[in-house]
Length: 332
Ligand SMILES: CC(C)(COP(=O)(O)OP(=O)(O)OC[C@H]1O[C@@H](n2cnc3c(N)ncnc32)[C@H](O)[C@@H]1OP(=O)(O)O)[C@@H](O)C(=O)NCCC(=O)NCCS
Image (cartoon, rainbow, N blue to C red; front, side, top):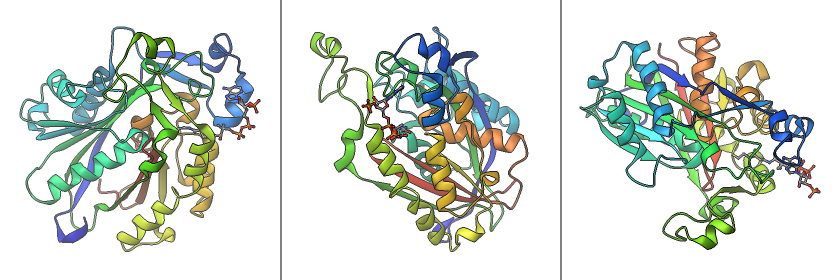
């Protein structure tokens, strides 16, 4: 951890995706698109869709409980719970508080982080700080999204990209030399319009007009996102490595936000790494926004792609525009 504070690492992970699968072929029946277009432009074949009776906090709670079970930690031991989400249950109360209640983590504080698809990276950085300064021992960080609830399934330029799911990590003190070595966060609010929901909050409350204009749904300028994600974003990994006193050659593994296979390949190539040094879930789960890195990290660990001592880079980017990286020497 930077600044001579005590080291903090990820000691357990968990993930949950809904059972219901929506394939590209299913989307072909709903909008003017093709399985071929979606696979070529995004690498996505299918995505998971939340059950009708569930909401984002239910996905968060299941991922959180799997993570705590793996670590054999009782929810009452958790002192802080951070949920990264851009599709919260409600504008208020915070989804983190609702999730805290659902898992019974009654000794924990709870707050949301909303930096859209880089929310998980921001939440890890924030959570680690509370352990590094000695004030907390056990922090649970969750990325959870139910984008199917905010997508416009008549808009082919946005609805094909996203899916629902959640992932969780448990942060605790780790041995010296291991854990989160550096964090790096950036934003460019002058490009905030590239990814947005126009209506449904203070700037433009929901009305008959906003509903009629379909302004209460998620919108994305895909080409602007492409330029952002393949332009400035990969440099964040270099900047974060520098903060950690490392260079690209030291990176063993990288997990990027699962936005789009073409973007992931571009970033891996930029870093001079091979596709064996990353893991992807985009084909099966699509882009799960703030949950995507958490879900992909959990799977990479479960299939043994990351081992103790590996230097792992996490790179998130998306609405804000905001982007963030974490460099972690794996501690367990
Ligand atoms: C959006 C993106 C796929 C466009 O790629 P591109 O190679 O520049 O696209 P092309 O110009 O070949 O194709 C765009 C055409 O496909 C059409 N199109 C858009 N969505 C489509 C869909 N779901 N199915 C079929 N056609 C679609 C567009 O209307 C456009 O048609 P037009 O040329 O007649 O106007 C690319 O810029 C991209 O990957 N952006 C990143 C998006 C992303 O990952 N977002 C995640 C948020 S973090």
